[in-house]
Image (tube, rainbow, N blue to C red; front, side):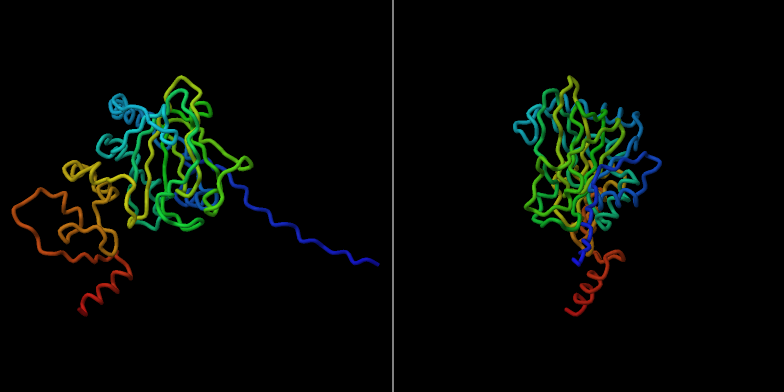
Length: 308
């Protein structure tokens, strides 16, 4: 009698998808879990259309004086305006330091992150698809790995299938460096009303979609990076001390006017917020840069310094 061999069923892989939360259902824990599992999620109506209307009014003069791009990646029918912390107070106060988003980002980047690129992107009629890419490709890290960049794209206007709503490949943040998106991979679009945001791991493949309408599709890109990485956009040129000193303290710290443990980024041997003071005639003595939040590395370093 023949022996019947019982086959072990193949293990099913996770079905990656674009998770969508309503504003009241979104929590930092749910968002960070979605990012770890799927690489992306959408939060609908996170701020009001009134807030986005104010953002639009503040940035429209900059868009009006800005030309379209000169390449397929940045978009030949797309306008891009950076330096948003100095050009739109509403973007800074209502979007960049939105508490729910910041808490989710901190959960992914282990706190003390800083703002990296800030950009208003307006995709015009007849724009073609942007090549799918990873935001963290600017850093020499291998994939898959721990998150180094988290990006939020806010919808200033409605994002639709027809007008260029952001494309994403759920689960691609877990791919290695050899794999690229192919015809068999599921590509989704962030279809969401103005005031919503898609948040994703910087290792996720994504890109702008073609705009088949006669209207401009406008969004705000805010990227957050590990605090010890160089920022993609030079925030100290985009928002120099004479501008930054008028921002909320939380926003000042987020763009880089604070130390990263143990003491990265000091100025005059002080916390970089010292640069925001009104200049005087004298310079201070060197400060004790090792604060209580610096952690074990700083304590070990402090011990070594005392020995020398």
